[in-house]
Length: 124
Picture 1 (cartoon, helix red, strand yellow):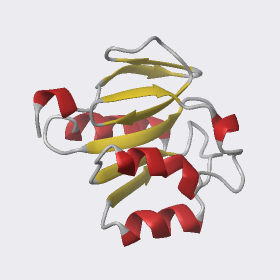
Picture 2: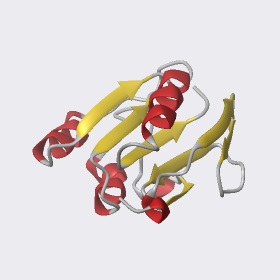
Picture 3: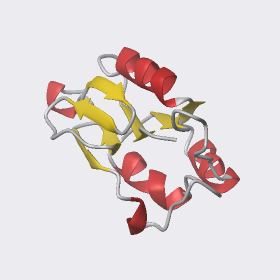
């Protein structure tokens, strides 16, 4: 894994705001080896229920992630569909589903050692 393929580190997270290395501050993010961008739920029609869908994680897989961190929000209102978990499992990806602050800590612990990606929701 080249240094240019490292996932960006999350510098801070608070209610409704995240700061990510190399990106403008925002609310929700898709981060992956080599970069990241704001996570716009309207692209895939994602809502808290039923939650993160296969379409939300496809981009992470396409970027070469072997570990994916999915944040459930600060109040665990974001869910993850069984179909998204099945897709990640079929691809042999290690998955962590955690409250946002824990998700950020796990993700940051992995950025220097593994091709990690994540979906981060910074509010409920």
